[in-house]
Figure 1 (cartoon, rainbow, N blue to C red):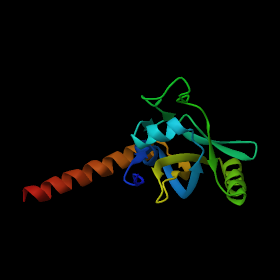
Figure 2 (tube, one colour; figure 1 turned 30 degrees about the vertical axis):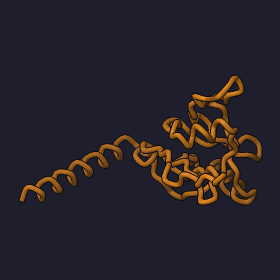
Figure 3 (cartoon, rainbow, N blue to C red; figure 1 turned 180 degrees about the vertical axis):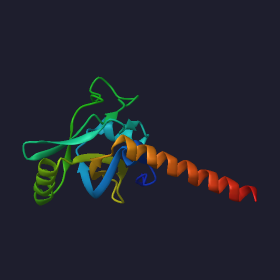
Length: 155
């Protein structure tokens, strides 16, 4: 039997994160998943809209990441909103913990994807929340750029 190649193109993204937060630094972390969660992720059945990372003791967990129960699963299917442990080196966890507590920053997941080896990974960003006026400026700038592109096309 031939071995399946991992689906490298599939990425579940948090599109609102770039709008709601100023991203300062990015990290890649592994994620502990159950079997049916992996199958749901491979079929693209997940959402990072309300997700964030939180420290519980000396461990880092992904909270509010919704992974839809696997449709062909049985009674042992996973809980959709359960906290999932993130895997980082101890040194990285300590570094992030001090930055989050001292500076009031947040850890926001940007995307979930599969690595070349077929392992599920989460891209986290150390982020600072944007104020409402910053968001309005960003919307204005985006609209102006869109109008400029449309005007250039018409010429």
